[in-house]
Amino acid sequence: MFKVTESVNKPIFFLPFEKEFIFDILFGRIKLLFIVDLDEYMQLYSKFGYKAEWGSTKETAKARDIINKRVGGMLVYKNRGIKIKVDDSSDIWLFNGSLLKIFFEQIYPPYTADHSITTLNKSNK
Image (cartoon, rainbow, N blue to C red; front, side, top):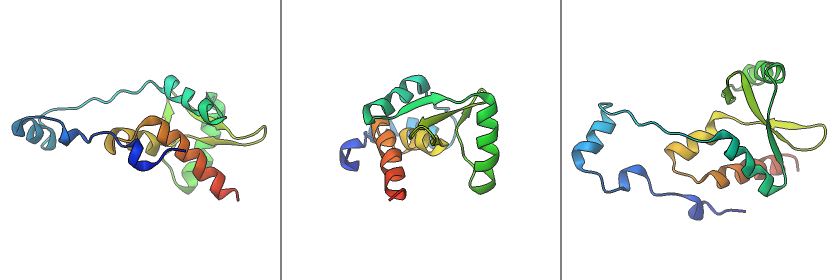
């Protein structure tokens, strides 16, 4: 298990940028593009004993209908979501929040994978 203090990267505004560049970011004069390799991110779950895979478009649509009635925010790319196999009969679906933590809170990807599984295990007890 990761500790939060070991999983935090340096926030973007702590990097040695000139003041004008930071203001350009804050006021939207510059666009920042964040990129993550979702297939590589899915591989992180195998380190914790789980398998992440792309759901079919049909599975994703069904899961999204159910999830969006409650909370919304399921991660979908090209009409397919990422599901994490918990056991033979259960899956959890990846939400946008996992990636938002990586991009905007500068949390390392392995921590988000471990945290989602740890949270699931606590809720099942």
